[in-house]
Image 1 (cartoon, rainbow, N blue to C red):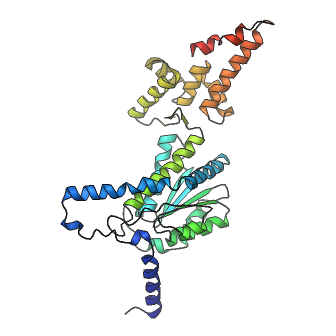
Image 2: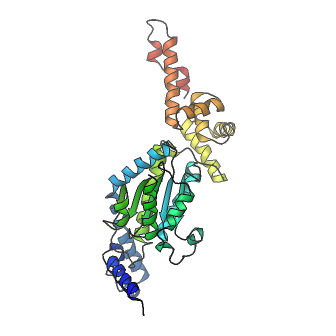
Image 3: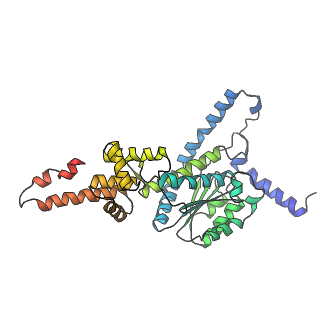
Length: 341
């Protein structure tokens, strides 16, 4: 028999869970009697609710992205917190950013209740430890310049709640991602993102619609932050790290498309730029060597478009300065370098 205190605690927890949308049954109690084709249709039909629910949180997601970018520009980091599926989704997103956007692996981190072993195997009771995330954040040297994103479908996971509480003491920006309205973590956060997707296809299995919503949102947080940080140009990744043949080929194609050159020129320029797509593009469009391209990108804080436009404006100004008094020809026609581009 459970002790009286344990029984009371269980009663309170059961009551709390009964009010969570993510814990309710969808009403499809006869799933095991349906054909596989019927199951596929039903599950896919229910999944259509997820992007609509994410769209309803667009304003909050935009606020979160702007907050993350502001912290990144101050040298801050983004740190995900979660347990189980939510923790794995944060770690997945963090691990994909360095190869995709060329970020430092320390810039975006993921913490999961139970530590790295919990990525592959469930660690019992780890998510109930309200103090552990604070310990881990302290070990990372959490600062006011950082952002902590707590992910919890229920919105009440103790590991995440405790981590956000600790992060507040350090002055970090707090973002909460939950699948229930009025969540505990939402009330703690500076920017609550509550994407309510409704009951799961299989009751209580929050790796389903809830997990899909979490993946969509974290994709937006980091991808859009990288766009705002100048990691893309004309919808193309220009800060990718070429770690295999496919990515090396993609680098060549990117330089070809952006600088309008052939494959041989793109490859040779990339070699001269030590594989940097951005430097190669600036070298070609500004007709400068690698060191000057690097300087221009540094002055533009890594924004390829800014580096290119500054180069073009200098050419235009130089053409105007060289024109004879009263001669409008330089203003009327592009500089030869610009025509070549």
